[in-house]
Length: 142
Image (cartoon, rainbow, N blue to C red; front, side, top):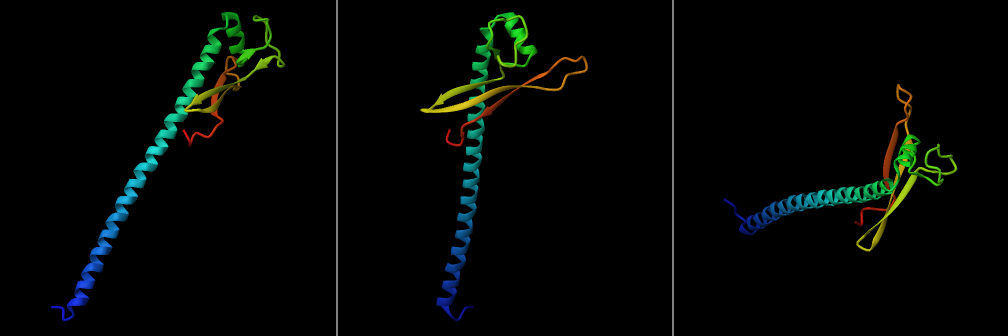
């Protein structure tokens, strides 16, 4: 069929090389995709772990309050009041709306900030509080 055997052999080698290169590219692409997905999942889990740790710390902070102080602070959407008066409203100067948790993981400390924000009043004029957690440190290295 082919008059030039060297040319046919070279064409076969070239064809096999192209096929193998294509297969290697597909395998590499699939492998990198799995690695990227695993890293993203690990970062998400790490971030959730940091937020959960800060939630536990905030819960501990609230659990040591007496019921009057807890009720007063929750009505005003504050973490705590620097005043010793637990029954009256806390002044703006004494109210603390944020709490920063310092969470050590593998020799590195991550800062997570819990912050109370006030939303618009409801129909019955009650004030709703929103507690948000923000990770201040870079979690990519976790």
